[in-house]
Image (cartoon, rainbow, N blue to C red):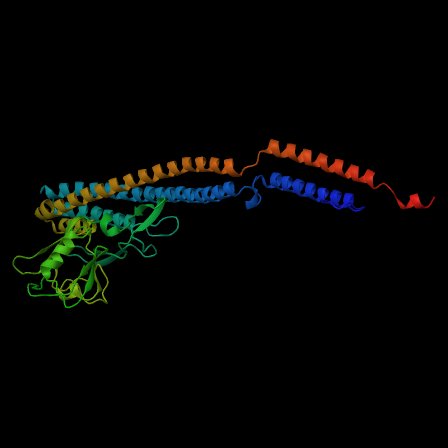
Length: 414
């Protein structure tokens, strides 16, 4: 029941005017923002879908950006690796030439000069940096120079030449998300890319009576392995071989020491994470020494880098030792070239995968954008029609209110 009073018409008119202005303001805001939903109450279900779609679209755009960034990095890295492969091919040609035994020692010294320059170019490629100033082949230690050069005297040469090349980076990898919980690994470790041979490590300490006195953790090529109290050398070997590390372990049949061998061309990376297992086995020095140059004094190592093989070739050419060139040196160069070809193929495959993910993310972004548009975009034709209708209604209400209250003070002054 409504109470009839002289103010009822005024109240109803004012209330309807405010309601019309509110609706008109809402439509104006929709047209101005081009969004149908101005607040959650407008369409709660659509608003929930819209928030999820927009969040997913942001992630998809980030996935595409990550994939494109990785593509650029892989492409740049592949360029330096391809150039290094050309250098190694030329070095091999010189090795074959120097091994045939028909050239004089003076001719071989002249060849050594070219090999030395090729070595410098190979090191320059290994120490390459990208447009951000980050080392390409230093793992995640991107602000360090990947390889450090040590000079020394070589018999037969009057100048100091490169005698040793040491790796300053690390073996850590970056995992870049290119899809929901899917990652592409960016492995830039230079002691894999520029390594020529499988590295073999021969422990010198008799470990037949060794037994772990406490629970320890060792790290082999970045893979942590748990050593339990009471484990002996055979238990350690079994755990290493059953781990994901690309290393095979064995017990030396004569010296009873721990032997380790990589399954592909790379430098071994060993350290004690907790405890002193590797130190007690004589494999590494104390924990203050950092890998990869923390091996024990009595440990024998076989298998070197591409730089080692090129240095060995240059030194053999200087000394005129064609038998050394045709045997060990040429074999090392072939293994280095094969390893680099394998790494190059892997880098190319990673580049293609990154490109495929970038293309897929780009297409997916279009689909998600369409979903966002369906839930949140404004129908302009409908909105403008509604705005005109509300404006017409508002004008009509104002006109009618003016006729209802057309009395003025002049009506009472007659």
